[in-house]
Length: 291
Length: 325
Image 1 (cartoon, rainbow over the protein chains, first blue to last red):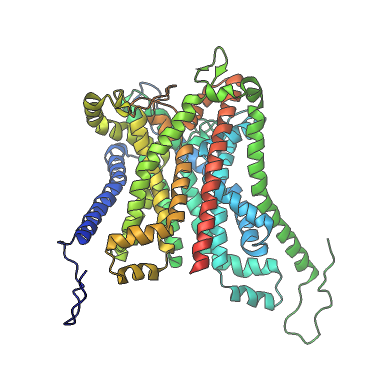
Image 2 (tube, rainbow over the protein chains, first blue to last red):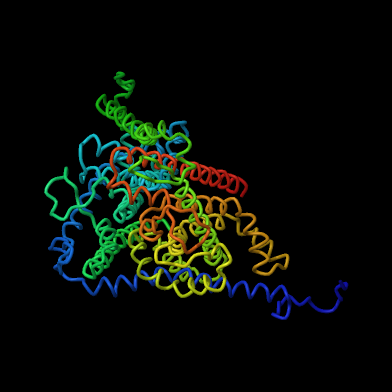
């Protein structure tokens, strides 16, 4: 190393001639390539959905029943109804419990032992394999009710939806400024009144984001429905009967040797992805002010 | 119910008033309700363990540990073993984690280290997050009709010329470990990328400025300062990604071939615990269901351990980094 000469400022520019700078440039180039490769799958999936699924898209799909074996045509109206009904049941179960639990975690006992354990288990449950929700509900509901049903399917989905609702609702309630809650309490509100009149309304957009995210997550699930709701080729007539869903229809049809069924599987995939994406975009729009 | 402690607490000329008895009562009820709801989560997890464990009991009594080390699944003779499934679950998840880890960390660096203007980074982040929104079955369908045909030429070439390497020891007959692993890697990429991004974002900006100030190049700053500082978060991203891969079901059930064998080859069909459950459960008889419950218990145990470790590391590192800055 030479001692710096006294004349002029040192040269701070890096040129590619230097080994270190060259290495950095090559790594940067590599990162661009890797990042672009990582975005290929999404576009490939969307392209296939639009091309293969879009080809069959028509109103018939929404009004007719799934075709059997060699039949041509048909649709999956019952599967769309089934998916919506079961997601609805899941939402009815997990939204009240989830928001109440989140209220406890965020407001009433944030530092208590119970809250710490609940929060930890909710986080662990977000990584809970969805198939195990199916196994659990099979043991707990299907065996006791004596058969596959939309109710069992909905309960299985609610197990998966619950942690998402709890964790996002807790975050949303924690974002409500302390001052607002203190002001309400100072006016003589009880804790419950503060929560109902100040915290919950203020945190509503954030809570909705979580709820819709939870719905988006379970709408595409199939593993928990495989042996709780099973499948049905007929319209939903009772919540206590086997029920069709879009995801199970895709799973069943994907392994069939008939072109008609494969085409329907693609069309059902397109509809399912559209449903899931709509919910995702909704939750993003609602969650925007936060970011 | 306790009587209202605020009764008579208001002076006559106050503009505010204390809660009435009714309000006091509803406050108590509401508070207990939230407490119950929080306790329900704990009860749910306990009930899940108890229910699956209880259903598996007969099978555990019949097969003991041999269930974990045997590789036959014969319904007729009621002999069950899940060694190939345990192997397949761990092997496919590990392979998926290697590729998703590399891609996910690179994407996280790409998005957090000023490679893109903020608006574009936002768009790109959305693209990666959208991957997580695509349902597993749709990935399965895509795998069958896009991934398998796409990798077939490469797989054939690798098997023909490099067949002596155990990894390429068999030819690709359709469904198999390679397409399943590719799809699995794509599915856990958003998890790995998102948690790694959070970890890198948590590193205080001045840490990077200090590195640049010392004359470090961009990649010297990233590899020697940013990534080591965020190492805890990145590690938890890998562990949680691994946990997600272990439990992934539908895409694997559709792509892995559900074959009861242990092989190192990327192109041979295999099976995983989740895929076994998905493919066998709907048609299983009572005895087989008990064996499947045992398999579910094993899967539950593995994923719970991995997820608890991942969540624990994440909590620990987040507390440490945010405590420091």
